[in-house]
Length: 245
Length: 245
Image 1 (spheres, rainbow over the protein chains, first blue to last red):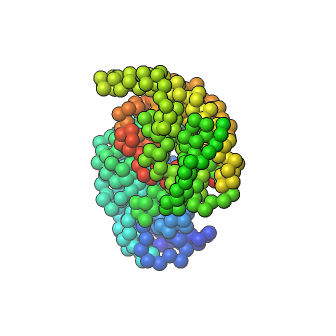
Image 2: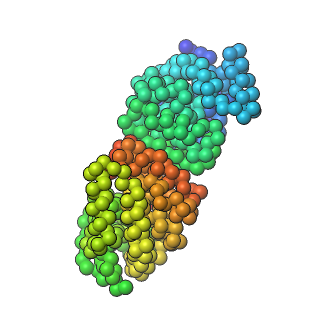
Image 3: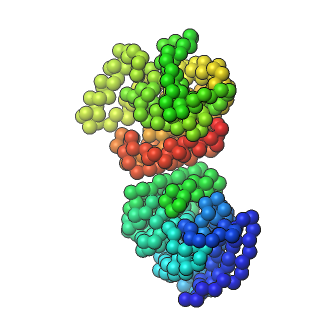
């Protein structure tokens, strides 16, 4: 696949380089003026979001400036600047209808993640290889950050890809993931929102429980699905510094 | 009550002053050479332990050296250098017998904490008043750290004493504490051991849930009752720096 940088900007000490790797649109965040190898954090966005969603940007910029990390975010299959296929459009419509009707979308969410996971894992593997060839990224340790759909696609990545050696995951239940989660062995920091109206608490606790990692820690905080407190970004930064620094 | 210093030593940058406040034996940890007011952390030990138990010492010394805090630990009623009364001896014997028989000690543990709580709260209130009169402690913010029995006696303290403005708690279930926990409103970091053989997981989750605090965070880690990972001391230090620093 061809890797091409499409634009570059620098703001507040962070250089953002937009790129395309074949059909995968992405953005690479590095500390301004960075040279030489450094740890790399992959950031997976949530369902319906994209590579520059606010939650991704906030983390990426802090990881780059405060941790000195390279951070790469890509659009997941059928998200952001990527084309949507028929099957995905059908799924997304069914899910909206089910949620509007007040029904439990757990089964459909799991099925959608399963639909996307094969491509998403292949995308991340290609992206790691490509960006680690850049002089200011290099072949350092790799971490993964992703919650909600970012967790649903991250768990299969962690189970498949030994270059990723630590992950912040969360905001997702165990449905459809128990077997894959058991094959994850790297350190995990798992975020749970105590009052999550989309993910039943016992299902999220069960996903944490299912992770095969001996070194795993659960951080639960009050609030709904999207209301992760800001101090969890501090904690994620320290977690990545500990395991990938 | 009379406050008297009984001995003083300094090791590795920490001055430890043993004291008696009336019948309460305690130890005060401050950074060596400390002058002037500073935040104060109260440390409550576990059941059967005492003011210089290893888990208390490790935290106290790090809070003093790395956080610049004053830290005070006291023997709980019927523990350490304090006399044991008849009722406590009876309770402790019953509890050992029940645990040896493989029975659930939850009821008895809760009853014992209830037996000790009135005196323990009064002790802490007197100790805060006394040590804050010392020049190198002063009237700064106060935090509380206590797990297991230290949590069982800490929850009533937090419900009763407005001078304590943040707490690290955990390793205990909700039994007998739901009403008191609901009256706790200060920020809490709650530790749960995922494989705790003494505290059922759902009971510990229920105690976290019962806390009235809007700012509370649960940290769960693999391992049994006493196996809190070392990085939770780092996290406690940052938690106290954020809320009492």
